[in-house]
Image (cartoon, rainbow over all chains, first blue to last red; front, side):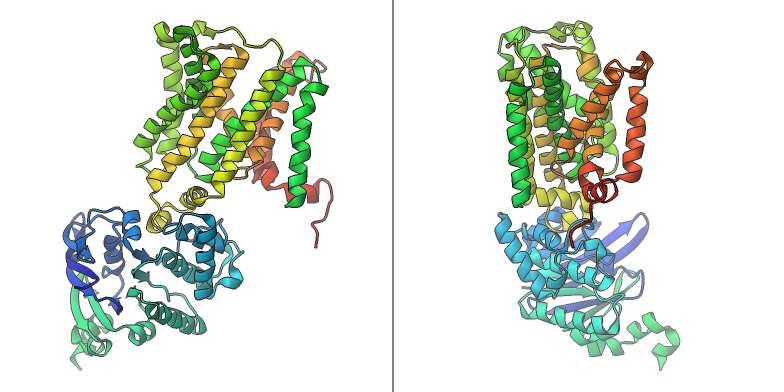
Length: 241
Length: 320
């Protein structure tokens, strides 16, 4: 049984089907990359999985049971963490307070929450910034803070939404290293990413969508050579070569 | 930390012996009213300052608390001191209803609903004469002739309120409240039931405000709808106390309460009788100017910007 199964997921905004009949599943322990050109419905898929949007039709199963009628916070409590593409730091709290607030998802006392938060900050290489206000962090730090906060809720599955966008090359390497570290700690990852260097090097499998519909699925190599994917990214002429 | 504790202990001792040293009823009265405002301001601050849900209608909770104590006494003969507890609980019930309706929505709905709520309750209290005696108001016998017992009750209520909020803000609830203020979407995604925690914040806030209202009933021994459900004297004053003292600081509303009661009284009494009478008419104008000043120069309030005040007014350099 897959950890997460997305079945015939459709999300319509009025007449526009942003996600149309998409089906995929994420196996325990793997990294599944979700790719597609701008506006293809990647983030909408994420927003449907954690019920940020209510879904129009289809179903989402987590560990075998449907989660489509749960609230966003209940989904987090079930064990799905997420980050936001447009980062949402709790600006006027320190980095440590940000992560501590998330740790309270699993523990009840401030002592335990802080201990957990400090462990997560160490893991995400944010220990040096722990007393800074979240709003004072540069974009690289904010992206890592997003991940740290999601990790602090002790998820089994983590949804990473463009955590590498806007990073410089050295930060990119750090980000890749961090994502691999998360996988090694036993957390399953579903990742949306534009930067091919990142997605190709870390994904076990890739699921490509365009205009809200699946166009390819397979190993990074298979997907990269798939004509439909090349067409979606580079245009028709390149696909015919 | 040690220095802060020492300051608090000294402040506590001063407040404890104040009424034994200063025998004037007038000054004791001012401090009692200031304590009451510490409670209302701190309650407002928990909800608006920490949780980000701005209330324009704390008079609703204050008035319901006061009327609960008053009505329980006149209709059922229950001591208005018991009314302090029941007043708090009654306000919580109102808070529960308002929160249940408004907190599913985001944006300005809660602020608008509280603004309307205060006025609705004022009209109910005015027109439901069989229960509230309408504009005649409720008059009870004061329990004590001296102000000193009231002074200590008010001090205890203020201390318990401020300390409770301090404890709450150190806990899981406190972290959740601030997370909700900073970003509701992020908070939801971190497993925080934002609707539930906004309601918890509102319940604590309305409980203490209701107790303050019931205390007012006990102390003033007279209430009418125009006073206890007043938009101007209660709801707006609660906001001013919070803003002037410092939003989202523990001691801010406490400082704000003393400042605002001081300013209000100075103008009401026309600078203690030294200035011409017409000055007392202008206190609303002065409140407005004060708010403009605070927002322009001390956006975080007196407590929030204390280091800035020290630097610019007292010319003290920050250590290091």
